[in-house]
Length: 347
Image 1: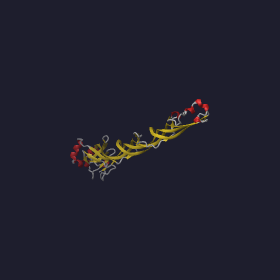
Image 2: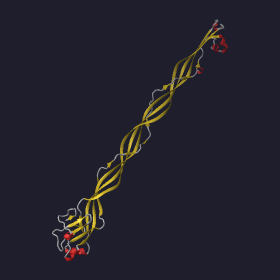
Image 3: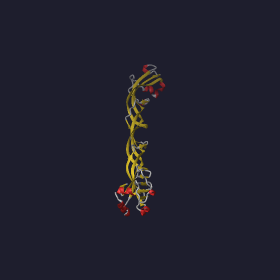
Image 4: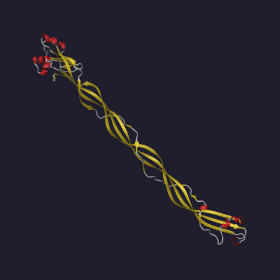
């Protein structure tokens, strides 16, 4: 038995070769699965159904014979695949901070005043000299600054996706009904020799079988969105020493002076009074700053500078859900010989 282009048996007999009233030495099937046309010998049908001539004739007259054909197929498949993902990352940043501090201090001050009279009244001499001394204290303040940087870190995440494809195949079966006729001319003389297949009745139906996908999916590179970072996390500033300028002390007029050190009956105002200006031939008034006693430093507010972001350290990518697209089918190809049936009995 042979289907055209596919081996069924070793003997093939065409319709034209059928002799009236004869039975071929070996029954045959000549069938083209593309068109559904061909020939089936009467003996093949009788063998399949277990009919004698009379039973077969009755089936023909009642048109109760139904010829069908099935052919296994294979078909290539491809499918687009999209996978979502997310990635965590960390980023370090450097921030500059500036702090102003104020420091108070006190300073001892001494004043030495000496003047000489010309009227002979000083110290009982003709040219008297008066000497005075006193100590005082004054307040001062100075401002300093200090600058330092510190390192912070922040965590972020970003979405990702990647595209891929996978290839596969599936089996299937093409099934269709065949129209037929008998060799009428041969039947007039004696009996027909077989059935002439006239072709498919409409398009054969297709029943998909098992699908097999290749593994794994062939993905491309991840495509990332923008990072979404949280707040920076900084530690405390670790400042060094202040860099101070000079103290700004109170003027002499604001010095808190003690008592003058003078001889009994002498008054420093005698040297400084304007009414005595013409009587004084020499005047020395010297103020000498002394030791400084520093007070505590009062820290001012810290002014944060701009944050300079450093490189981002990528973390692991967490793979998310996979979305499968439409399945694209390739051309169906035969994966085995076509099989003919009569009344669901294999020929």
